[in-house]
Length: 390
Ligand SMILES: Nc1ncnc2c1ncn2[C@@H]1O[C@H](COP(=O)(O)OP(=O)(O)OP(=O)(O)O)[C@@H](O)[C@H]1O
Ligand SMILES: [Mg+2]
Image 1 (tube, rainbow, N blue to C red):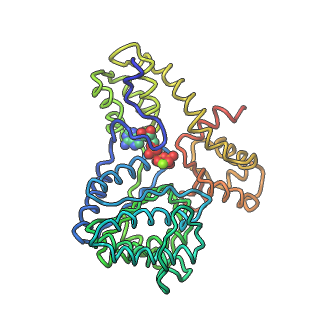
Image 2 (cartoon, rainbow, N blue to C red):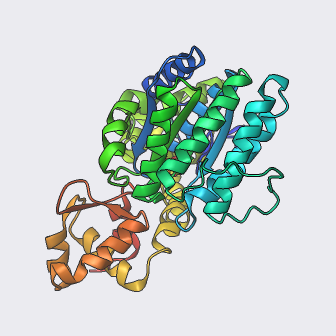
């Protein structure tokens, strides 16, 4: 059918035509946003899930909701190789610039700017285009202890936001790349702003195993956040994710084809978009039937293999590749690390550092002690398609 009208949206962070099966997560975010506007404490969300399940899309959706409610928002994608302070600085700067335009918030914003100045100095942030032309206030956000200083800074930003009659929502994607100290500092800071009923909220998203928290941060996190699992869609929701966009375009898909797409993709959002996209293009007309699915499936897999899957494997060193290939040889996972070691004919302890490296790259995670699994759904099948010849 006409590719120009194709409604599907395969791609990292691409807004899907139908955001299926995430009502509870969106409702919880909505509640938190509205409570905070009324000066009530609220639980934020930390969305945890595998690659391609729709975490970024949800964060975008929450950001949109927040903006609709009049919040200022800052969206950060945590990269592997940069510090939190460097990422925070320009965002906070931008928020304060906006708040400074509000007459009633001038004084509070000025104090927050001074805190930001001290913060930048103590952590040696290269301020670039975002220099602050105020003097720091000694003793505020300048101790060099990340937890204290992020807390000071967030309190000052929260006070400025409150003075302006606005709120601030910080959204952080790829939370697994934050260090335990960084994540801990954020959580303690949000705990304090929450206690003071300041209009500040944090929403995060990341792979299932985020940094192990310790001390106060750990106990606060359990109360401050809900940790909804973002997973494959149920069969009903997965079918909606395909059928609804097609019907919205005035076309149809028959039940057989729908069931097969749901089964082939196992309900994983990224794969649903890819299969839906190809099925639409390959089909001669409406309704889309199962007869086009062989061709559509081949095209979908080709695109995934050359994109979604390939960019992941390309980030591994040859030794790391050997490790994940050994995993895939064992079947669908999760895998016992000891079995992977056996498969490679090596000692478990020798492989420890390699396994840790692959975890740090976000390619695998440990769902339970001694176990290991891929963060990309169906990655084992990809490896067997392209990297394993028996
Ligand atoms: N609820 C949903 N229903 C249908 N499609 C969805 C849904 N959520 C996400 N998608 C689609 O899935 C794909 C992946 O979404 P997204 O990039 O948000 O995933 P992610 O969890 O952030 O992945 P990664 O961990 O790789 O960053 C996109 O093409 C998006 O349109
Ligand atoms: Mg994402």
